[in-house]
Length: 485
Image: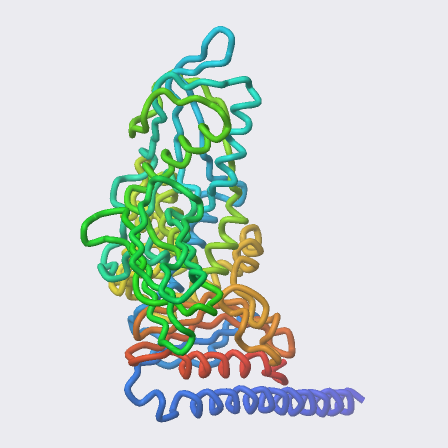
């Protein structure tokens, strides 16, 4: 009897092992087929002169599904923002908000006059003229009608280094290369709007949004015939360290016009100029001038505007906003080591967080918060470790995950992978600088297996379109995986 039982158990054990072996073999075949598919994509002649690093890992079981040059240091471009934003959630926390405050050092007995009016910034990259108007409206509702002294800006929460290391001089004055500041407004840019004149030969109509005396316009452009080649150029006299905006060339008569963000010098003074202009529009008399300084001890807080970190991070990652990343990195530095916040202190805090995920601080180079600099060097495996570490941190993961662009839905991935299984599935940060395109994030397979991945391609000339197509093909292949479970 015992022998018969042992025989039966042995039979079932053999059968079970055979089933498991078959299942394992089937899963291995799916994985191998996936690897072959990626090899075919990456072995295309398109990649002959490029360098590609890639790593894909299952977050369900830590299996490496694919890797190629995974430990190679490459330029990350805007995927650097993953280092910045993940660290921000660790250091600042999910309830953090960026404050912009208004103080005075003296209020008259009847409450209608203040002496000096102070604005102190804490790096809110999303503060705009609309928020400024709202703050000033609250000031007016208090009954204040006169500022007898100056409008003073306190930007001491950050150091005075306004650009990242290794930023290209000829990126100026493009909106993506705005100067960072603790007192930021309108992304430290003006929007230049150019519309054609009414007839050929007339100058185009040029305006600034918001309208402000902080910038001057030099318009030498011409409205041209529709058969002529449009050659409109909008710039700023950045060689002269000037806030004079130049518009030249030709704009076709039938054109709908052009809008372009142009950076301004001295963002703090831009903020204060807009504040003074807004106060005067609201019939609050300003007797003094604008000036930079510090809020004195004992000053009275009049208003405080707050920007929650979650909404800030959504714009930062989905739109890949460089100013937001630079301000955030300096805010991290101030929180970790005290004001003034600096890029260097922010990066020290980043390295500490990354070390907690097994990323050696000596294994990567980060010099800014946004990835604009070509000095940054990070390997695909470091990104995968970061993504894995964030996935395990359920208390902060959701804010991080939902701040990433979604394939075919929004942000910098809004037009990509539409009509595939990656659409509304793959969440990832894009990156683009000259000769570089990167993509790092998460995607679920058809079996709901969560994958973390990093795809980094560099050393190409011209458009990144064909390499983005390859990234999209890999993203679609990951989302299409089925049969590994």
